[in-house]
Amino acid sequence: MHLLLIEDDLDLGRALQAAFRQLDFSCEWLRRAQDAPLRLADVAADCVLLDLGLPDIHEGSGLDLLARWRRADAATPVIVITARTALEDRLLSLDGGADDVVLKPFAIPELVSRIHAVVRRSARQSHEAWTLGDLVIEPRSHAARLAGQALHLTGREFQLLVELAREPGAVVAKGRIAQRLAPLDEPVDAATLEMHVSNLRKKIGPERIRTVRGIGYQLLP
Image (cartoon, rainbow, N blue to C red):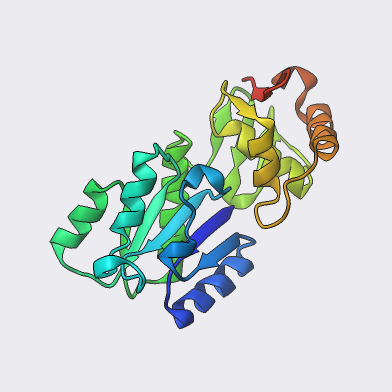
């Protein structure tokens, strides 16, 4: 899972980065609103953690960023992390498009559980295990099963399967997949992506992944 953290507090940012590394999450950390992407569609984040009290925003509110992203129809889950305990601030965040609000100080395990929860909802999955026919995917435990048998997937193959499974039946653009397979580096090239798709097809069945020429790939149940 790849996260975008926008938080100016050095101690908290470092603690979260260390915790995410232990969980094998990748995380891009920004400390200023002006460095944030104009559109969330331009980044490969599965979830955004947004502090409201950013020093370079007028009146110190990250809600301006959130409003801009939602106006652009960004569907990426956003969790607001804030020290503002007033009910009004929490309601403003939720009404402004936040998927959840976490108050500082918080326990990192709780934050991680909330991240998984909003990502599940974003993928229209109510459980930890995503079920597509006889294919079962467990993103949190990095496991997948086909007809009850464990699938032995490489890290990239599992990432690819998860990206295709987020919207079963939808065609996922090659460029989006390439970026999400390497969120902190240059997107994987076309030949490498095709290799990963070919290898995944061998493990889950070639009929399950349909190529839509010139666009991308579609996972079929």
